[in-house]
Length: 278
Ligand code: HPA
Image (cartoon, rainbow, N blue to C red):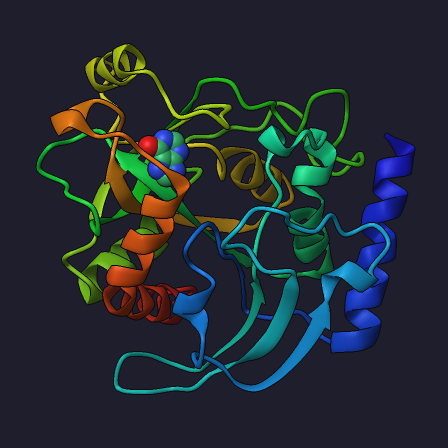
């Protein structure tokens, strides 16, 4: 894994050289979230990630390929935050090795970013959480995404046997919920995708006690925690999971729902950023 470590370190050097000191919070904007962050930050600087050799850039519709650094201004809603927005992510289902899936997150953490906010789109496993519902993750069940720490991939930093109790920071989440009480809390189950689940799988996942199903976030959360970052993750329910009330999920529906509920999501995103750190 020496080679992977070299790639991460090379990216850290570029971030330091181009952007200086690390931000207070870095955000990975998943499907449907890129537009929610528009106009959020002031005094922005942007790096086109496609110009960086080793930063794997997203190919999925709804994901961007820039890293934007800027300031979320102080307001009555909370203090100023310096923020790095990663406009998209790469997924295992794109055929990417797990080291590539988490490389950007590792670089942001090794740069010194103390708080990592991971956003995604998910299918709701609950009839009472209709599309548009936002959920802060309390925990996850990993049902098929690789663990990024396998094979000593943590670049020799920190333990491999990472304790995942409170992986999703309870303190950060509580501050978010205090500011945005309509944000629900629940368990995210990660599936490999890219096909959506079968209705039978959806029934099984419901019986296991999961609240939302998606195809991302878990490897990034583990990699960030292993490097000492505080992690918060939030899902937007963009559809009812397959078969619930006759649901036939599609990527178009995911993007359309995210658009339709964009204002509430943008507000929750800003609140999550203000809530990072005491
Ligand atoms: N299943 C898995 N991933 C998803 C879904 C879903 O229903 N919706 C958005 N991402």
